[in-house]
Length: 479
Image (tube, rainbow, N blue to C red; front, top):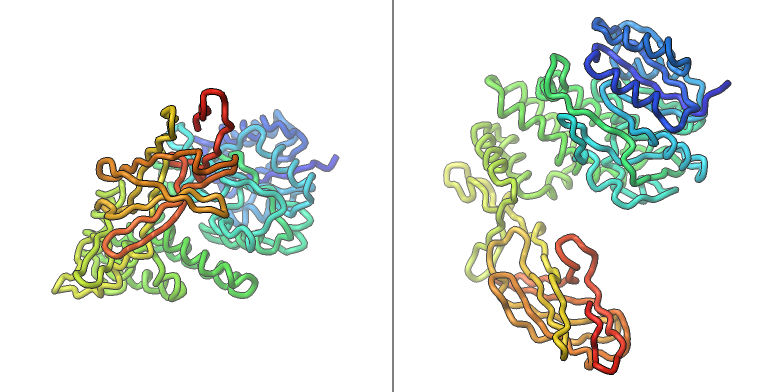
């Protein structure tokens, strides 16, 4: 019988973790699967664990090869795969019980080429959000594509997905050798797919291994590891440049957000930094001028110091960043014309002479406006809210509030309460009807003017106000 899904699992010296992985595969609610275990030259007890599973469950098959790395091991597994669909799992991770049923079911319904889902990070037995995949799967969508849903540029892993086998073979997808072999393949698949399904549920538990000789956490700042990552970046950029150039800026921005951290960490810990600096210059030469120029101001400062080989200063800025995990400040400077700069070390340092534009943070300013409460007093609605500029530790000098229904704008009289609080009264008799009203805000500080809509609390949607119907006792329905 041909299985519906083939799951390829390469393994090499993972005796401490492989049992939990294989148990999670055996427990899948989608039972019509085969699990192809590729022994990539294991020298510990991993092979014995795999053989025990294969002896107990005929769905588990073992393939053996000399140690060639995870990419060639996956390719070997694919050659033995028989399923209509194809999936991959790493032998130290865990797959939730309904993951493959969910992903395969989506593909069967939509006829998309691949389905992908959210990822949880296994840290000391606890499940956390994967920061690598953050913001990707908050809004599930079927039959989409990376060129329409560009947040998928952040989805650079192969194991949180199920692929249609015919699509994989038609596109000639294959894994290269090297440590970061999945990044180029994941990006190629997203671009070459006709359509992609995004599901909101967590479909993969990615383990963070903090100990052991083969821990990626321990090896990711080694020069050889950094060269491998650079090779993967180059491969992806070359492919995008040819097939989807509109995605290059997004990919470069992600490299500057995530991948560049390993270079910084290497420079923070090295004794002889020249080889790492040379490698860093090769990294930066790959990225677009636009991506480097539009990076956040604190990242631009770090990159500026790297370009000039100022390792000691870079280490000070990195320590400054870590000490302010709650966020750094943006400050106004100038008397006649106010500019807004990141409040970081070395601003206008006479010895270093770093250009002011490196610190320019005006584009990072954001208006924070929210409604905390809206209560009926018997005569009017009393609205309490908050207005400030994100990362600016100064009271907004002027605040204006208006209710808008798309046709009319009704100004509200604003009273200040404390540093950031605002209070306003809404008389529903002046609004009329039962339309939906949104609350618009205008805030001004030192010549900076920003407008926007108030949100419902800290993380809620846009705040809306509906005029309730009248009753014998007046406007009684509270919002």
